[in-house]
Length: 171
Image 1 (cartoon, helix red, strand yellow):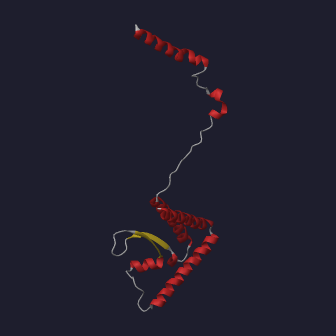
Image 2 (image 1 turned 90 degrees about the vertical axis):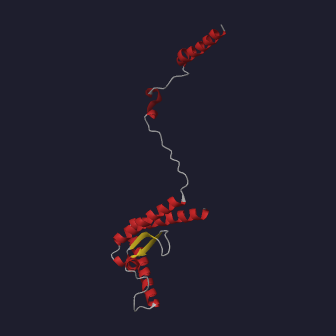
Image 3 (image 1 turned 120 degrees about the horizontal axis):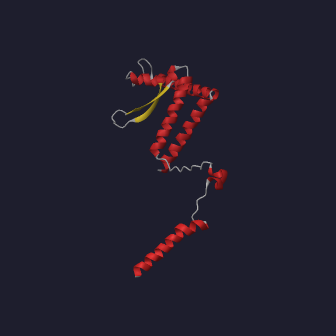
């Protein structure tokens, strides 16, 4: 008898919820006409991005650096001043590091010329390399002032570099 009363009460509650409540407006769903034009508009998407790792920031900096040098090398007419970056392990190590060199230094490394050319004094060699470096910086400044794409790549690289260095310091 008790069970029948409990089932009857449960049936009563369910029947109220299923049949009576929708008529009262408790469980109704709105149609598109009732919602109006707002229902047709797309819902804005919210993207939450966490803090980037130092490794991810380093890779973004490398990407920005590659873009910068690709644009610079394309605009630069003097092939000796082109810049190339590679991953290589220093002598005595297996750990590769990113090294960017001016084409002149790249050719010296390719020819296994780790010392200055024969017949050139150390002071003379340093002076030649300093002249090349100054010429490269002057060329970069000139090209950046003439080409907005290079200027933007340069700014992007320095933004990424600053972000990477600040993340390294806070680590």
